[in-house]
Amino acid sequence: MKITFFGSSHGVPEPNRKCSSIMLECGGKNYIIDMGCDITPELVTRGLTPNDISAVFITHKHGDHVDGLLPFVDLCSWYYTKADPYIMIPDMDILEALKSWFSLVEHLRDNIRFALIEEGLIYDDGNIRVHAMHTGHLKDSKSYAFMVEGEGKKAIFTGDIEHRVGAATDYARYVTEDGTDLVVAEGAHIDPLTYIEPLKRHLPKRFILNHYNGEWEEKAQRLINEMKNELKIVLATDGLEVRF
Ligand SMILES: [Zn+2]
Image (cartoon, rainbow, N blue to C red; front, side, top):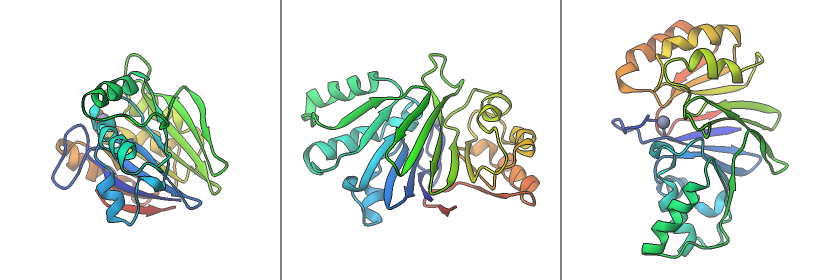
């Protein structure tokens, strides 16, 4: 598997860091986790188009995770009409919001597939399996972390976790075994140093701190320094590609 960070910033763009979006490649197929930025420019820069995207998984409805859906669905509606992404959203209100926008400016192509995410196994195309797990980020429970399995590997994407206590509660809840191949964890709603204790309990092979707040960059660096002898650990940056 391979991931590429299209956007690694938190709720607000940082210099050279757009809002959240990650492309996952597995078995010759491409998938998107969160779309907080316009991804088509990123795809075409890499010789791809929306036609090459098999599925999209949105962790929750905050703009820094979902705003890129509008330009993506727009292009799939009138230009990339052969694109057939399976778009999984945590709240069907997102689709209603898209429909109201498209009633103003364009028609939404009616055979673009949308589906609701609920906790449990949400996707299995014979290539990857995706499990959704609730996080405490949104009080209405419509915020998720994803565990993705494919090519014999297992990766966890925390999405946004519960404010302040997330590293101790949400994160620890998802990571139930040692040896997960990759964890991509957020660093906007908690002090990055609070990952140290749960990380030491369940050590993945790799850990990438994503979505970190510029204010916490120094603490994020301290997390890296503290843990770098135990596992492969880096800060996410836009354009970063990781094979695992
Ligand atoms: Zn966020």
